[in-house]
Length: 480
Ligand SMILES: Cc1cc2nc3c(=O)[nH]c(=O)nc-3n(C[C@H](O)[C@H](O)[C@H](O)COP(=O)(O)OP(=O)(O)OC[C@H]3O[C@@H](n4cnc5c(N)ncnc54)[C@H](O)[C@@H]3O)c2cc1C
Ligand SMILES: NC(=O)c1ccc[n+]([C@@H]2O[C@H](COP(=O)([O-])OP(=O)(O)OC[C@H]3O[C@@H](n4cnc5c(N)ncnc54)[C@H](O)[C@@H]3O)[C@@H](O)[C@H]2O)c1
Image (cartoon, rainbow, N blue to C red):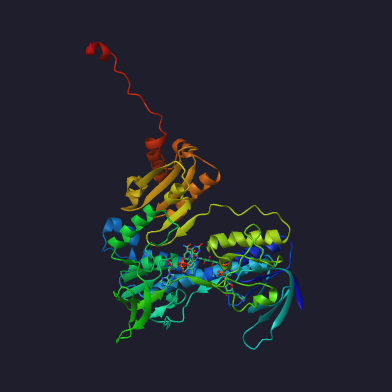
């Protein structure tokens, strides 16, 4: 039996960061991954493929140029499913290559196979192709096994017309119409990406609201853009069943009776922890009803202190970005290095079309906490860079404390939102105030100028010293 200082189960963002960090500390590390290739959900079915698809769609449709050349502008006519896959598979190859190299140069051992616990310090790895199972021992573990799509038994998934978010990447032909069930981040991203291909999309959500962690003003703007593009948004629509019509097309039955029929139905109503095959009970652990593990948020230790868990398997926020930080944090803690606490504020990027990004408090949060505040708004079309790019939409909203002048939140919708947000994030993290934006010079012409415009907007309303009207000399005499 081979012994390691650390065994990591799963090679997604949290697993890989945990493994490399431990190796940098001079520890022997094994990463077990049940997929044939490393990278996790992030590289194979989640972040990278969906963002590659988005980029391909925006490029091939000429989406970004339509502000100037009109909505009929196309870079390529008749875009096929194969066209969409080409770029994605190249990017995937590159990502896997980089990861393989990263593991190799840090002397992280990797093994393809499915890990399960035998007891709190031993695992067995089952391998395909008739290979003998292998046994391993470790002092510390990081469970970084991630999640998989939630597939309720009553939904007739067939991999072709009723699909989950893994299967959408394998579509052989592009549908003419699509129903997306679940207006979470995945549903919203795919609904808008496919709508940019001029596929008629209906987005169905049982709740009356969606993406509740985003500032409502941003969502109103987003909904306005979707309606403009004929994305049909059905909120408060409870799905009672999915059936097929006589032509084999999926019919999404809605409680109100207003059913939706389309060529393809994407079911994107959340994810489940991939913990079922891990025999966690043998390690002394149990999961919640969504297969997730509970950890101490300050240390990322599970109920069994030498077993850590990181990434999507521990639930919110379930992002590749935060998962990476958690993985590194867990490895540092496991080997006695005092890691800096995980930050309270992290940015959230939603790569819909248009993209949205947010950091800090929404206006709803600020009101709930009864903090006196002022908002500043900038529209991208007011910036010279926006004119040059032909942007007709896009906006930034900044929220400032009236008492401390500090930035409480930044919310952006439109081109570049996921990059621009980091300026606001940095100022917030460094406890900066509105004065930073008032006093700093920004490159011109840039979209970042929106920060200046939004800050000026808030300053004019709430922070500018009240200026007394200058007296005109001689006025007094004239009045007399
Ligand atoms: C469609 C989609 C789009 C997304 N877009 C974004 C985005 O734009 N930005 C963002 O920040 N996040 C995004 N995410 C979320 C992001 O992908 C996840 O937060 C991230 O992948 C979680 O990383 P993880 O470390 O938990 O592991 P994962 O990436 O989930 O990987 C876990 C790995 O563990 C392996 N594994 C599981 N069980 C075992 C076992 N018993 N033995 C061996 N191996 C095992 C699995 O095969 C898998 O490869 C997206 C997710 C999806 C689904
Ligand atoms: N850009 C990004 O950062 C990004 C992109 C994609 C996914 N992710 C991550 O992946 C995770 C999973 O995303 P998700 O969108 O699958 O899950 P989610 O939990 O965010 O959203 C699921 C949606 O489906 C709805 N829903 C639940 N049950 C339903 C039912 N029975 N019928 C119809 N609708 C139902 C919910 O109300 C919710 O709106 C998220 O937590 C997110 O953080 C992140």
